[in-house]
Amino acid sequence: MVHEDPAGTPGLLAYARVSTADQDPSLQLDALARLRPWRTYLERASGAESERPLRARLLQDVRPGDQIVVWRLDRWGRSLTDLIATVEELGRRGVAFRVLHGAPIDTRTPDGRLVFHLFAALAEFERALLRERSIAGQEAARRRGVRIGRPPVMDTEAVEIARTLRQAGVPQAAIARQLGVSRRTVSRYLDRGG
Image (cartoon, rainbow, N blue to C red):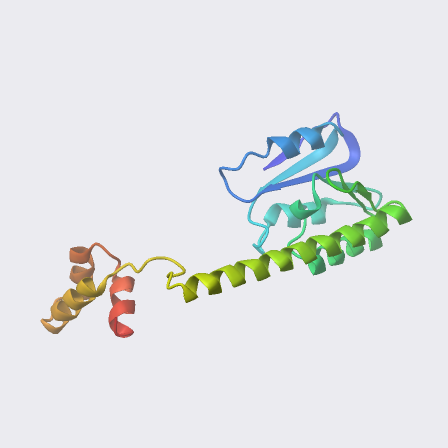
């Protein structure tokens, strides 16, 4: 979604992102609206997703002399590499980058560029620690016998019924209907042996 304000400040473009459709972007949008941006791009996509069409559109729309402003640094980039690469590319194009919340970053100044690099590195470090803790937690749970991941769609009994029906010549679509699963699920369970 792109919000346009023709009475806003030319050259100031805002970007907001929420990870899911049910998240409320109001906090970001309210903070960005106080700056009276010319245009606000609201993306609904996970930070891990490589496809963010509105961010790509913003990067196409921005012109030399413009400023891009985001509420928080993590709303803009997926990783330290992505953050640094896009902000440096914007700098080469003569576009400033600002962050409102957390560390106030403004790449129009040398201090702002330094703060950007420091906070981008800290954000990447925090994500790496979180990833390590998550992996360690999963390993500890596995050692305790906890099953990690989605529960199986078909239990042992359902797989045996599917095998029996297939051996009797029942079509896979009919087996899937009878078990209440997709044909692909039946195929996956039978092909891998349960």
